[in-house]
Image 1 (cartoon, helix red, strand yellow):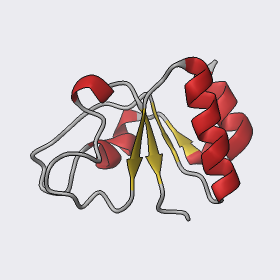
Image 2 (cartoon, helix red, strand yellow):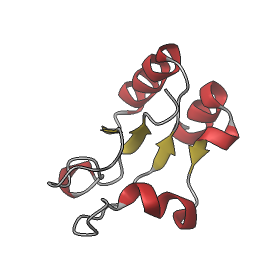
Image 3 (cartoon, rainbow, N blue to C red):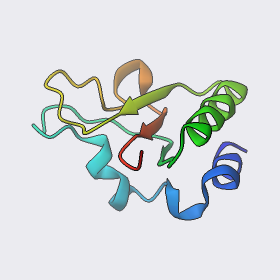
Length: 93
């Protein structure tokens, strides 16, 4: 299962699925773009980033990378074709 595999790599504290917690990641800072992620993955190392990407590829789940979530065109939120993606937060790197 996707979430179980992510937790196995990152630990439960760094795989967010609670909508009350993930909403800040799923909305851009302007509030104009919103989406819904299957999970927010928060790796701390490049090795963990690579592992998250392998897991998502194995499960056929798209990935939306997010740095500071400060873009103006909605590219950092899992909307449209990327809805249900794993949001890969790079804040811990």
